[in-house]
Amino acid sequence: MLSATLMREARLRAGLTQAELAERSGRDRAAIARWERGGVAPSVETLIELLRACGFDLPLVLVAYETGGDERLGKNVMLSPERRLKRMLTSADRKRGG
Image 1 (cartoon, helix red, strand yellow):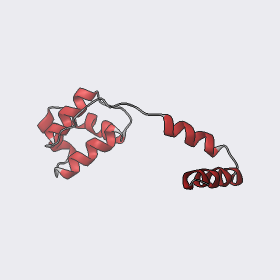
Image 2 (cartoon, rainbow, N blue to C red):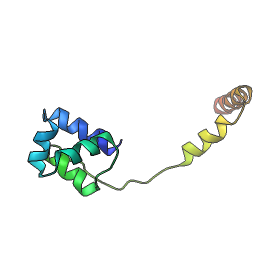
Image 3 (cartoon, helix red, strand yellow):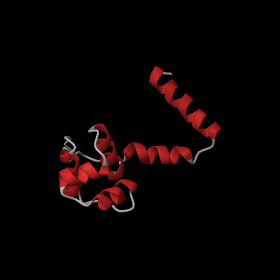
């Protein structure tokens, strides 16, 4: 999710206008408008401050990034529909023990 979407969602859920968020956060309203349009992205620190001014938090935690599924999906997309169907049926046969 983009920072622009997060900011706008938090502000709207809090029932705030851009001007009210600017006042609460000590930021310029024009900057908030630019960030919400996605033309410019605030730093992570600024984004968290703005979300907290709306009464929300954005917990940041590291999680392992897995690419295995994306890689396999990308390869399957390159196959013809007939070949994909054949692979699926072969896989189903193996799972049934056949």
